[in-house]
Image (cartoon, rainbow, N blue to C red; front, side, top):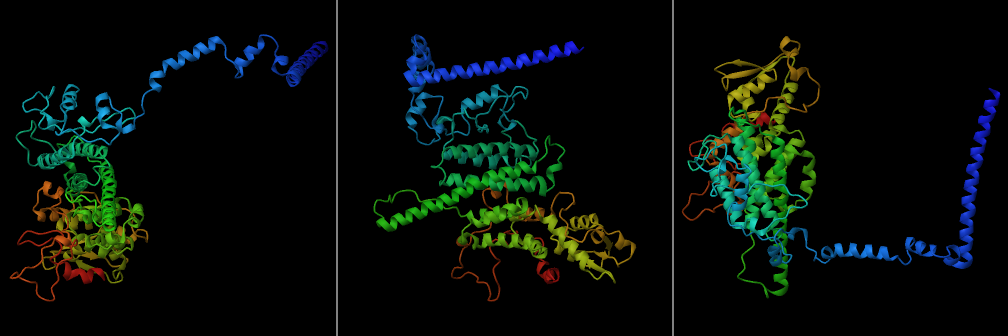
Length: 567
């Protein structure tokens, strides 16, 4: 054993010595080459034919074989290197198209709602929507009706090229908007005989319109910056915004999301995403129009109108811009509260002081300062689309107002409140809606024909079993963060929509927007003038016009109970 151990130690020692000798030999060789190069240059360090190999390796004169290889590589890519560079937007599969564009932005040349090539391609690949089918066609292998087909949204990709012949012109874009909102939007309740299908739930109508309006926005964006300040660009985005808000009401606020015929459910997140994709270009268009008008006014002042084209079309200024700003602020308050402050900081003082926009800022201030009586009063008095934008936090405001009421009544003696008063205070338009909300949170209702509203709500005395079982009274001593009441039809929104007396298309085209103050007709001679002391309703707050003989829900008894509510 001792001899074996001795031999192992000896072998390890020998291997270590060999490594040291190898390292030292490499070091000495490098030192000799370095010294020779210092004294006599490359010829002394690498004499003979080895110099050529070294020069080829370290950047000297390449060999003939390497020269031939480089020549072949250059010839292989010569055609690619010789091509003229083009901007990404102008790359096309058609050389003839690229030749006449000369680097300018795309200008739509398609005057139809959908190109024949796309329609036939989608027919072959079975990507037609049921609204585009030819009447009487086989649903298993449908044929396209070119008169009803509209461009489908296609995701962009790095290698995707847009051709001017496949991009709709601005007039064609607007004709598509009119077709979609007039013939398709109300198809669930008013089917048209020209279509192949006659029974379609609104969720499928919405899915189709969301895709086609997105394709419309793509066609308009491809023609920027020329299209940005055009009337079609602005009005199309305004219609898309109203369409998404109207769909938010139809699928959530009116309780239609539970339609048994629907094969899919409404995803509020996708709807809000579509709204955000509409808001940004719309705000940019408003800004671009103002900047263009300012630049033209400065130029006209400096040059005295010299050189300006008097026959040019006047710049379009949307009369619904302030209404859109109002909707955007209210939507952000309801669904993205963290972004409201940054959005308001970007708005000019002139816009913020407009009555339509100041209404939205009052609503936001009331909600942020826990003034829920004022918030619900403004919700009750708002126009239809503004109320839809506020509806995202309406139930939470109702719950918090009820929580404050329950926590502040005289508990040692108990109390009772008429149902009509609570209904007005919490901005309900129907007794059933108010009763279901109150019962959900454990409040006891007692039917009494003599009470205002036919019933009253019991506020139990402290220490009684009813008080101990009331969730709002026994829960944590802080305002609720979330409303658990099932989302469904909001009676106030339903009543406002019914009082409008407008079709869905009228609402999308701006018929339900608050009337701009600058277009309100002034009293003429001989017309009845309002008596002194009476005030006109504030523009934007009473924007919902009720049909003759009907009152706006919640306003008939609003003034009667406002003092009691706000106290």
